[in-house]
Amino acid sequence: MGRICQSDETNKLIKCDGEFCGHYKSKRRDGLLLEAVDIECSPQSEVYAPFDGDLYFWKPFGNHVNYECADEGVRIEGIGQWQGYHVLIASITLDVFGGRVKKGERIGIAKDHRCIYADDDGDPFVRLQLFKQGRPIDPTFHLWNCMCTGQICESNPKNELLGLPFKYDSRYNAVRGWDIKCPKIRGDDEEEMRVPDIYSPIDAKIIGRSRLYAIQGVYTGCDNNGVVLIGTGDWTGS
Image (cartoon, rainbow, N blue to C red; front, side, top):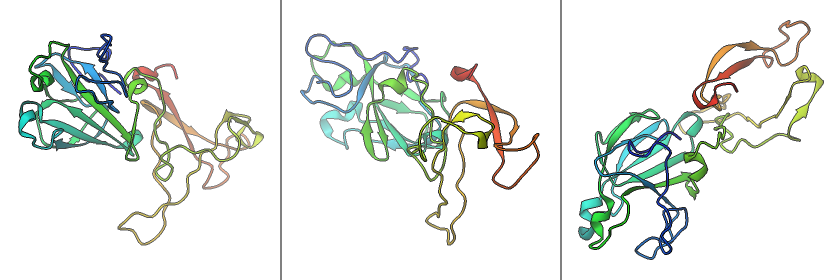
């Protein structure tokens, strides 16, 4: 994920003060144990999209009259390597209420989430929840650049392996690596099975083609095409 808040370059979480914390599944001031993190963020700071996706307006408090001052947020459904994920961020005043966004693109301005508490003098924050396949997960390592690869095959959102991990096989010119399941897929509006789309697992640029198995690079079949990616951004040198 990229930076979330303009005033917080490293996505720092609200520190524990002995009773309350901004960490995943820690207790908040209202006594709840939340599957969310609270990221340090000064009011009126710019807020950015954590990954590429489709943006939707979201009401975190469901129009509850007592929380109206903070009842504005965003849902972003991931695409590409973030397909299968969605994120909820609150409270922010949005620039737009729908459409495609890119990682790092400004999506709005942080509101002061503390307005819902009469006596809250704690640090300001925005609250972030991350879901994978509809289930809440801890976003902490993603926020702190864990260098996790994204989804590779459209029909395999969990990157499930085929056979033993980390092979060393003469079929692949003795290259070490993994075989990842990638079965054919049929979309909701499609009649026939088709080969799935393949996504880049990292931020990268394409530098050329590779052959998985060949004699002196000779083409030997339709299943013998590969691509060479060189990492960019945080993945430079990979």
